[in-house]
Length: 196
Image (cartoon, rainbow, N blue to C red; front, side):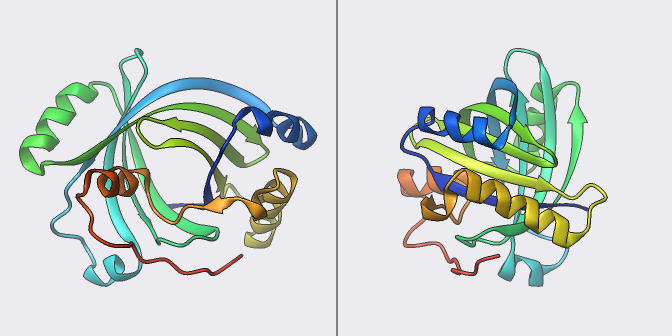
C-alpha cells in the first residue's frame, strides 16, 4: 500500500493561514465539496493491525462532478504526525457502489466537508470546513520516491512554517469526531503523544 505522513489540527481561522501559506510558497490547487461515507468493517485481514491502526473504508464523492474514490486506510490514533497506509481506486459510478456497500456492510457514518487543497512539493495541505465539526488543517506528505528522512524533513518544514507545533492536534478521523458528537462513541479514543 502507499504511505503518507499525516498531521491534523483544529483551526480557529482558515484566513489566518493564508499569509503563512504565502511564506511557504504553497500553491492553491482547488476548492471542492466532499462527502465521505464510512462503512463498517466487521472483519479485517489482520486482527493485530486493528489494535494499533484502526482500519477504515470510505467512499468519497466529489462535488457535482459525479467522480468518486474508494479508499481503504490504516492509521494510528496519534496526536502527533503519524504514518498512514492506504490504497484507493477511482470510481466512475459512486452512487451505485455506495448502494452495494451499504447493502453488504452498512454505513457507519457520513462526513461532509468543503476542502481547500494546497500543495508544497510532496505535501498536500487541506483546509477543511467540516459540517457540524468546524475548521481543521490536515497535512499529507506523500512518499513519492524521496527517502524517509527527506519526507520527514519536508513535513516538519511545512508544520514549522504554518506554526502548527502550537496548534490543537486531532488524533482521530473526522468520522470518529462525527460519531463522538452524535454519541456513537463513548469515552475518549486512544492516542499517544509521540512526535516525529
